[in-house]
Amino acid sequence: MDNSRYKDMPGNFIHDIIEADLESGKHKEIITRFPPEPNGYLHIGHAKSICLNFGTALKYGGKCNLRYDDTNPVKEDIEYVNSIEDDVRWLGFEWAEHRWASDYFDIMYDAAIELIKKGKAYVCNLSPEEIKNTRGTLKEAGKESPYRNRSILENLELFQKMRDGEFKDGEAVLRAKIDMSSPNMNMRDPVIYRVLHETHHNTKDKWVIYPMYDFAHPIEDAIEGITHSICTLEFEDHRPFYDWTLEEVGFWKNPPRQIEFARLNITNMIMSKRYLRAMVEDGTVSGWDDPRMPTIAGIRRRGYTPEAIRQFCDEIGVAKANSTVDIAQLESCIRSDLQNKCETRHIVTNPIKLIITNWEEGRIENIEVENNRNVPELGTREIPFGRELWIDGDDFMEVPVKKYFRLFPGNEVRLKGAYFVKCNEVIKNEDGSIKEIHGTYDPDTKGGECKTRKVKGTIHFVEASTAIKIDIREYSHMMIEKEDGTQEFNPDSLKETWGYAEPLVADIKPEERIQFFRKGYYIADSKLTTGDKKVFNSIVNLKTSWKK
Image (cartoon, rainbow, N blue to C red; front, side, top):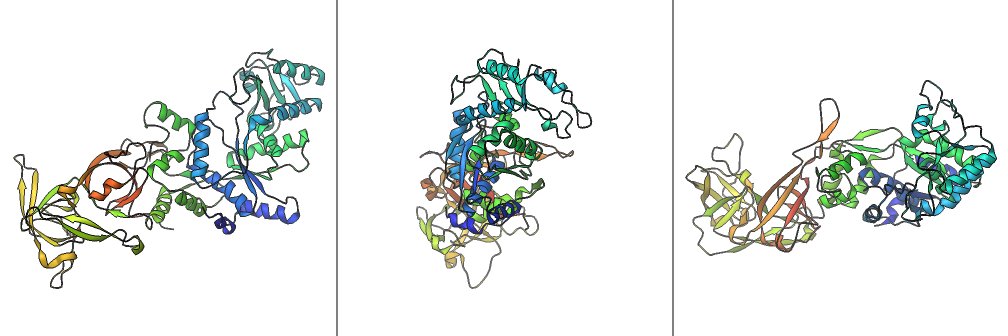
């Protein structure tokens, strides 16, 4: 990827803050981070954060770290770690440093001790349910814990007992001592450490107490020298605690600044990890990389390109308020990226056999057609033409509707790059279904051109004796909107069909993208395509409904 594109990337309110900090001398180098929790696969909403964090670092000649917030050993898995790294690299980025939150557990523990010594934290023996019930509401203040006024010495001793494993899970927590009447619920003595007797993938059995995310995150940022901690809008109410933690711990002279931006919401997509995980586990979808899924693994298998995703993120920009983006805008970016990259190939679905009765049997002629009419540099190819052809089921009507210009009895059409052909007869099976169509070609119309007359319809074809059979998976939006505005799974989001393709399609490799003429853009499925079996996933159709 050409990283110079980020030097001129569109500005936003975050960049205004950064430029002011650079101008004032507060920071000399910009350092950002992308901090996923390794408890699931990343989705396209994370792609926006990846592009913003890595792109911002590139714009200002700084660096961006990849850091795993692995403070909860129960939910984390190395499978997710590997997928995250694949996703970041697929999008075209490389991290400056690879970090784990668990690498900082010792410092976090020291920070907790510092808060206890300052009288800013205490060990609480209320149960999780009791803590929840005493937090209060948005209109009512919370109730102070009966353990809130323990002495510093007693808290230090109890916290040591927590670390030594003398408490069972849920029997004791360490809470920050702030203000139980704060209008911000996150400041009402939040829990900053809990007991959890679980083996951690990194620290093994060294710890039986683990920091809470809201306490760990600002410390991680400060340790790494992050200048601007860019996160989504749901963390805005957590920012006061972020700032409180860094100020009260006091280990860092120039602490990072948290800045929030609107998360990405797209119509007909759902970004909830819990919902996505449920669909994977109950078999609604085939896995995290099902091409209907909004995961980066899913859209990659679907055939979306990293260039198109980056362009989409640039176009939608960075906002302060949440909104929903029309999925048509995303599809427009995919289409724009593919239209000058993909070569064209002929396929037909719902095939109908067309026999050219005045073409001699056994004769095969190669017809030259362009690979991409918009990009002459992609050259031409030859496709076979013979007596027996397959045409697309949509290109024939026995009783045509008004303004139907394709093939029907008595009508003449142009076969793409070949000849004019007239339909003379329809041969049917005993059940009344169409067996084949008979027609004649005009030898004087080679190349599909004629000076003496014109035809209104042009259709494509596949020569029958050289055709290869392919499987096609037509995907539509995974979610559909109900009348009440909520979304539900679309049972018609996948339709499996098949068709015949020109012989060059046999050479297409897994993950290779192609335009099927008059159909849309497709990709050879990365898992199901083999040397003998070709399975194609629909990426996006040829026409856009998006208007800028």
